[in-house]
Length: 71
Image 1 (cartoon, rainbow, N blue to C red):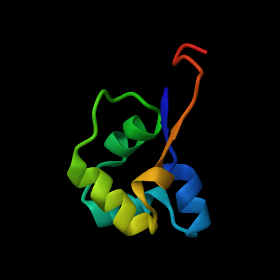
Image 2 (spheres, rainbow, N blue to C red; image 1 turned 60 degrees about the vertical axis):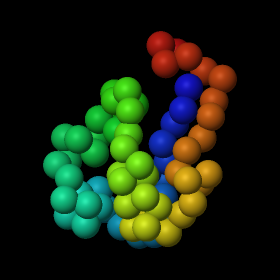
Image 3 (cartoon, rainbow, N blue to C red; image 1 turned 90 degrees about the vertical axis):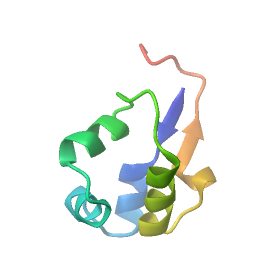
Image 4 (cartoon, rainbow, N blue to C red; image 1 turned 90 degrees about the horizontal axis):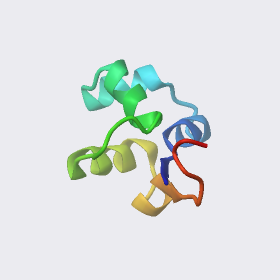
């Protein structure tokens, strides 16, 4: 399962989800769906913007775990 580290990166950068939504022109509902892994895909534009605003690389943005989504 792929985990997206948005919450962790926000904490490191002392930013809020509200701030990120404003910067990316995204609704909080869509951001929360991405954070919870309730989406089946993320556009390259979003990945690029996440990296830009969270000062990270794609490798830092994503983590691969062996756990199933159901666990």
